[in-house]
Structure formats: structure tokens, C-alpha cells
Amino acid sequence: MTQLVPNRLLMNFEITLPYRKTPPAIDGQLSGWSDKERLPDLSQLDGHEAFAPVWACWNEGGLYIATKVTGKRLSPSCDPKVYWKSDNLRLCIDTRDARRNKRATRFCHQFFLMPTGGGKEGQNAVGGSAKIHRAREDAPRYSSEKGENRLLIASSVQRDQYTLEAKIPADCLSGFDPIEHPRIGLFYILEDRELGQQYLTVGDELNWHVDPSTWATAVLAR
Image (tube, rainbow, N blue to C red):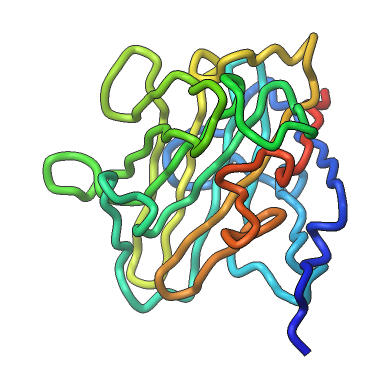
């Protein structure tokens, strides 16, 4: 029988995001990450299993995220002009965690991160921020390739896998204030043309890209 309502839609998730005084190096090697920073696999609640681990942590300098995608037969296909059709990791953050808001505010951000597609030859990791549809007010936009407040992103692409790491600087997060607002909205979706989609709470059919109330809550713990 087809499940009409995903179990994850019926729950409000609260995740602890660990503090790292010395953050992981953003070099595509994943050497600075541990199981302590690994996000939980909530997809098991709907009878699925994640195909890639995702790690995240924070400090006063911003938020850090990483993933490792294995079991690939094709090289990543990435184009920042059509990031939503590419192999990518998208990260959504609401620095006010307004869980009752059905539409995004200026404190809500969407970032896309890709293992390739950047640089003159398109072989470098690349990322940027994107508009959230139907937002009441748009957050500022940033890129990994230009501007003073740029995203830091790195990858390592091999024959059957790739790793991806990024730092979202605090300056790129409107309203980021861990002392006054230690609870933030958090969502990610990992899209791969071979392996499909992996997401934290709900998928496209339930409008995560429009509705911040579908995201999880992350507590910026020390």
C-alpha cells in the first residue's frame, strides 16, 4: 500500500548541532569530521535508507557541512545556472527558526553546493545562494566565486565517488546570532541523477522549497 502521508511530516524534529572551536578544514578530504557531527538518518522513519552520510557543525564563524557520495558509475553533472537539475547538495537555514511561518522571511536562506561546475574548465567545486519561492522578503544572495562574503567550498571527485565540504560564513547568514537565537531552522536535500534524492524531513511534493515550517530545528549547542 502506498503511504499517502510521510511519517516525517507528522513530527517536529529537533537536532543538536555540535560546536567546533577549531572547524574542519574545507579541503574536500573529510579528515576533520567525526560521527559526533553526523546528522541523523530520518529517512528510516519512512522505510528508506540514506545513500550518503551528511555532517554539520557550527562556530561563531558560521556553519559547516559535508557529505560523501559513493557507488557512482557516472561523473557528477553540475551546472550552477541550472543547479536544481544538477548533482547537488542544497542547504536551507532559518536563523530565527520561525516554525509557524509557512512562507520564508529575510532570515531564511537556501544554498546550493556542487562538486564540479566551477572555474574556467568547470572542474572546481562551486556554490551559491538561491531565492526561496514565495518568500515574504528575500535574504541577501552570495556565491563561492565572487564577492567579499563568499562561500567556501571544496570537493574531491574520484571514479566512483565524490566528497563535498563547505563553510557558510556568518556574514552570509542574515540574523545569525547563536547567543540570542541558538535555535535555527535546518533542512538539506541531496540530489544525485543516479541515486535519487535524500532529504532531512520532506521531499519536493510537500514544498520544502517554499514552506520553512517543514524544516527541522537545529540547536546550536556548545
